[in-house]
Length: 320
Image (cartoon, rainbow, N blue to C red):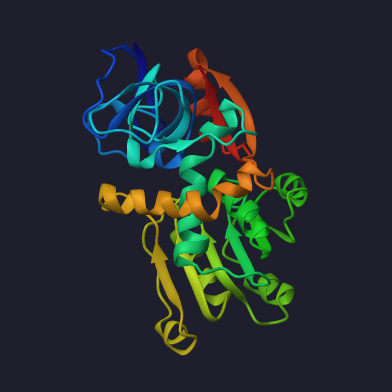
């Protein structure tokens, strides 16, 4: 089968198309014929100098073609979506515990744009963030894949959403998805605008996609008993000062959502929560991922360059 291998680096991501053997599902896994896959910025960041290329693609949607031992929840031919190993390929493996049936209204491209960002957003907004109807949500870098999914999910949950972006055009496009307040900025200077929008109280939850350069400003923007989710570092700034007095006096909570150190069982538990609490919104049409652009499989290198240009609003998808 054909598969793309990636070598992330500070000057851009190296991309190589290889001919490899089709993988065999182990017990508890399923083999999927990939119909569509999508890009995630975290895959393109960092990378140690001299590190070997690795199979790219962390999520996909497709048909189940083979089951590993012990898999009974799905059958061959089922339409599934989920986290996977090597999604930038003609076939990919999924842990059966993380495979989700594709909601009826979603096309392959939309299904491929759903698993990673919306499950992470569920973790931030529901499982850990405890976002309630009527509360204010602030999303920095709101036009990113995670940012748009946070906006959409926040609105479905009844929250009011503030978003930051350096592009007025992107903010205008997101107003159509329900963005209540757009703040045009790429700097840590949005605290005053947030307080003005919230009658001086601050927000109940922040989703920080940008990174360390705006961390202190996010803390300043939180209300009493506010929560701060750290999910991205588009600025590549991995450290920041923490105002301990604000943390203490306002009884704040700061948390991360990386799956890197979680066990397979822990990841699967979050997927089950998402399926129960959020996936019904996809079935009834209240949630639908925003796909900015669709590329062909042969054009995946161009899709990566497009993501690195930071021009998209929502997800970038590759169709097989």
